[in-house]
Image (cartoon, rainbow over all chains, first blue to last red; front, top):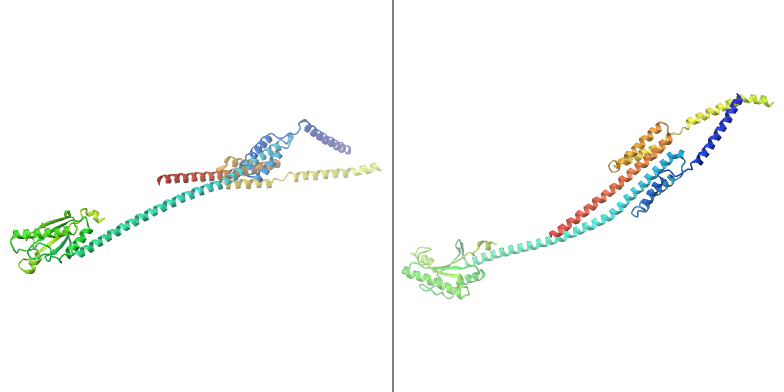
Length: 297
Length: 133
């Protein structure tokens, strides 16, 4: 029993020694080498480290990767092949992680530059827009000013005209402004304008000087005292007389037409003194300016 | 004297050896390497993080491999092949980290691309606006 145990123990020792020896022998037989793939991991790492855009951008991950590659390069025996493959796997992935992190960082650094560029572009755009807007605003303001000015001018013109018309005591009709000069200009039966009776005519001169585009028809009318023929002649002469006066005051003759209307357009009955007085008259019809639209503007 | 004592010692030796054997066996059972919980947990966390970072969209092959490795690690652990389980767990972790890193890089590049396109569009716009004026 005892001896059996002893022999077993002894056998065990011998077995152990043999195993150890065979291990050592095996170790000698195939010397441990770096596992396959370690060299590839190293060259990947080297490629990464020599990329100027990436090399310095992930120092912590790079340190990890270097350690992993060194570990992968450790020689392993055949029996440790699995461990070697594991280390190579880890090394490869760590190098790739370092590359990915570095390229993230690179993109972020680029972004700052892109951001600056975009800001600059935006600023340019805004400046241009602002300039354009300012120009537009200036133009618009100028336009508005001009419009206002022309509106003001038109208003002023209209007001002026109204003032002038009021001053003339003229009546606006479809034919134009009708200014009745009355009979006070002439002595009965005479056709020359009485001195000192010209204040109404002078207002007409002022008006015509101001509104150069208007022409005037001067109509002479009489009452029914005397023959119709003589009244026709008288009315014509009186109209001519007024025209002559206006021409003398500097109004172009081409703007003035003198017409004798005779006694046929009475304003009132000829059977009374006052009626006849109303009928004896010279009427100036001032044309509305030719293009109505132009004057409206 | 020696012989009797020797014969006397015999059974003791036997019992001691048996005890030692039992202890050794028990020890062997107890120290059958424990499951690599830490590395499996780390791998699981890394996979989850990669998923959260949308690695499925930007680094799909890496994420799948990480998941496969993790599953294999779990299988190995269940079969009490703890060394392999630990290695697979570590590989799953590093693969998931790679998936996340690649995702970040792809996102960063996409943002830059967008900015570049935006800047170009802006420049074009400006040039057009400039021509119109």
